Amino acid sequence: MTVLEDRIEMAESSGEPTLDAMFEWLEKMPVPEGTKVEIVGGNIFMSPQRRTHWQIIFDVLDQLRARYPRQRLMSDVRIDFPGRLNGFACDVAALAEGFEAGDKGRLRYQDIEFVAEVISKDTGRNDYEPKKAVYAAAEVPVYLIVDPYTGQWHLHTLPKDGEYRGTLSLDFGDEIDLTGTVVDLVIKTEEFPRD
Image 1 (cartoon, rainbow, N blue to C red):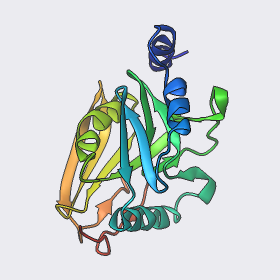
Image 2: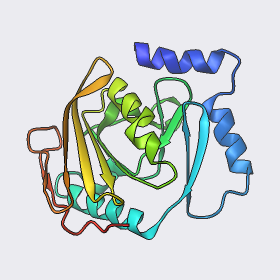
Image 3: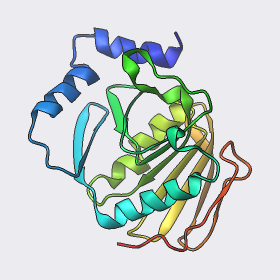
């Protein structure tokens, strides 16, 4: 068991609610159709999927298909991350070849090669701050934030000691060059819509 897996297990044995218990509660609630639900640091966040948001997700997924087969691409699927009660539903996640489901059949954060989050107005702070820190601690090699409100994207690479050492921010229209990363392709952004 790794140190990060041990942290998840410790949270589950400390007497506080577990991610599984919290998600079970959520499944019993009348969550509106088309609403994304995540648990970030033990806090529950719900945000409606907006058309602009989904168009960017679809565009990124479509471009990733040049490198990743469909079964290695995920969107809005629960993945538990290290730290206190972090159950994310990444907008886009690309998984390593030969990825395996964890115990309970869930995807493992250790198999993630790429994550993209598209900013939603009410939960955007999570993508820029706590989720970025969690992805870095989990050593996700490439983390992309796409912000339709500012028309910018922010690329984070080279995770080390719980933070990203490589950061690049540019505008929609500028290509996202991932050829020097495990993803090894270029994502075009000129068709990303703005909100």
